[in-house]
Amino acid sequence: MKIKVDSPHGTIWLRLAAVYFVAGVWLGIYMGASGDHSLYPVHAHLNLLGWVSMALFGILFRKFPAMGASPLAQAQFWLYNLGLPVLMLAVAAIHRGHRAMEPLAGAASIVLGIAVLLFTINVFRNAGN
Image 1 (cartoon, rainbow, N blue to C red):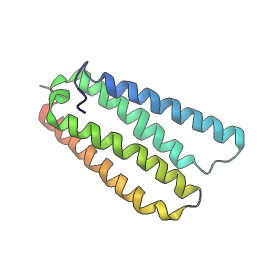
Image 2: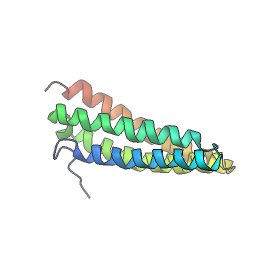
Image 3: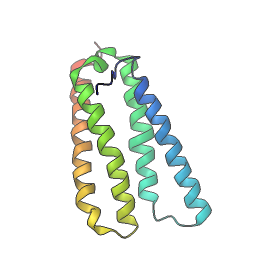
């Protein structure tokens, strides 16, 4: 399935950022209400890698449409959006005592890292165009 990450200019990233913002805030509310803060790394990553980073991707794709039109954007989109939920679930499992999930968290981190490299290459090639 091909999602047009450039149409309309980063909107998909902004919508996904909003979803991660809701997830991060509600996880924070849960932790505060329950007194169980063991998932604070998941909370932090949901907000930084989900809400903040995705919102910035969306803003930059709106500002620089050539970035969204790049094939790099398509690869970045899928890698990032496959890697991030897997990473969040694996980190949550690890912090709930399931250490066997560490290799999965490592693999998902690498996938996310590749997506970030693609984004960076895209910035250097297409921001300002």
